[in-house]
View 1: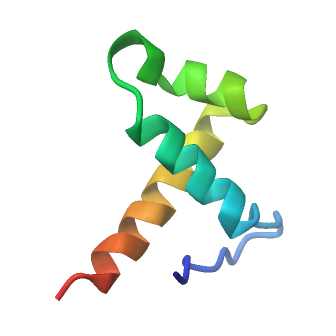
View 2 (view 1 turned 30 degrees about the vertical axis):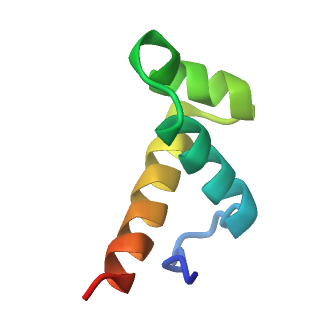
Amino acid sequence: MHLPESHADNQQLPIWFQLAIFLNGAGHYGNAATLQDMAKWAGVAIHTIHNCYKHVMLSLLHLHD
């Protein structure tokens, strides 16, 4: 799977870490699926969780016909 590259000065998280964040979020629902809970679980900022979700989802959609 190829995730879009970041053109910012910040380094991108490893793909395995982004995928782990996405799968953890996808595997939860309700109160356990909040961005705050996922950020606490992964030890990153809430905005990072949003970016990981977006990057992985875009990559998955790119694989679709």
